[in-house]
Amino acid sequence: MTALEKGITANGTGYGGKSWNILGQVYFPKAVTDSTFAFETNSDPGQFVPVHIHPTQDEFILVQEGTLDLKLDGQWVKAHAGDLVRMPRGIPHGYFNKSDKPCRALFWVSPMQKLEALFNQLNNLTDPAEVVRISALHEVDFLPPEAND
Image (cartoon, rainbow, N blue to C red):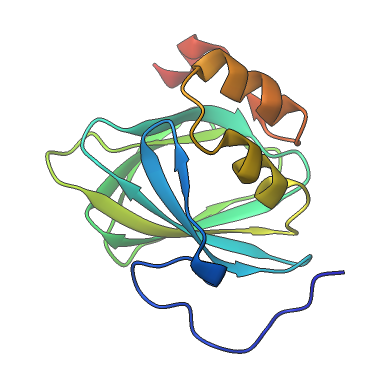
């Protein structure tokens, strides 16, 4: 069991000095325990994570800077700085930076399940098909491309 350590994970850094590059987006882990996993994303204009499902995790996004367009359970919505997005387990969702400015957001899932292990394996991969294949082995199921329309 991974216990929560007290302390601060500084802005622009990851817990334990770690970061991941997943298909060009930079992720910083902020807190890692069995009960929750928090990470910061930095999405440049045009970057996105396609619609997918976490069958065993609830997920949240706190937008810190910028705006995210989300496909949430088949509906398009916008989340602005300061907004909290709630995504219960099993609900299809994807996020897209359709703006002309970078977006920074804090994500967290509960429980962690296999997500940290997934990010470790996805770091620096460049083949989207391989990302989808590995994700399915870690309880993240991507929907067909038309789900992003």
